[in-house]
Image (cartoon, rainbow, N blue to C red; front, side, top):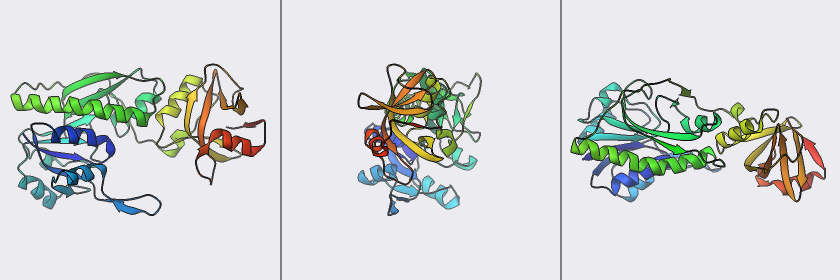
Amino acid sequence: MKIIFAGTPQAAVPTLKALIDSSHEVVAVLTRPDAPVGRKRVLTPSPVAAVALEHNIPVIYANKIDGDIQNQIDAYKPEVGVVVAYGALLPQATLDSLEHGWLNLHFSALPEWRGAAPVQWQILSGATTLGSSVFSLVKELDAGDVFSTQLHPSLIDETSGEALTRLSELGATQILNVVDSIENGSAVLTPQTGETSYARKLGLEDGHLDTSQPFSQVYDRFRGVTPEPGAYVYLNDERLKIHSARQASHVITSTGLITCRDKKLFLGCSGGSLELLTVQPSGKQSMNAMDWFRGLHREEVTVS
């Protein structure tokens, strides 16, 4: 089938590559315009645009779909649209414009965790499995009928960034199977059932680790907000960012204390300890946690 692919970040790349390598034809790619990246704010194509250009696939750049963009889409005569993290809503006229509609890969078992940050919220909630769904796009947020739902184990030390990478690879195969089933006429749509929950975009405040909470909740929060928006504690009213950490095998230090044991650095929580690996003090570069602590010349510090 002729496919138009809509996506922007790295998480969308595995699906695009799977479609390019398949028997189907990706006739065009819809993605967000080049964005400034890095300290020098250099305008850089999205990861999806870079792959499309590498394979000589026409790219349509748009933050929203207007009449001109719709005409560009129509010109390629796609039969179905595939969406993975495009980053903008498709108007009803666009949703109605293709013979087989638009499919979306969403990283939860719908209707759970509709919205912008499903992987992060599944980990924050302590879920033991992570879902992925391929569904038919409708105007209401993530509410369309479902072609396919899969559940995958939530790995105990996996951050949300790592989980998203894993799910994006698994989801590529999942959505390719759905596209194949649409082509051969075996696809089945099932209405969403069950309790609906929403995964709002996380903000800076969501990254704060409250060490008075049970350790499992603290560790789930650390994993859920890493790498974005990032985990931190307060040291002398300034944020100490925690970029990488792992759970200790047993309680090492008291709640709210950072201390060194056996050349390793630990943050005490209620019922457990977090081994700190990489931190970033306010106004400084990211650094090895032990190197940072040695520079304080203290036996322990209290954080909140």
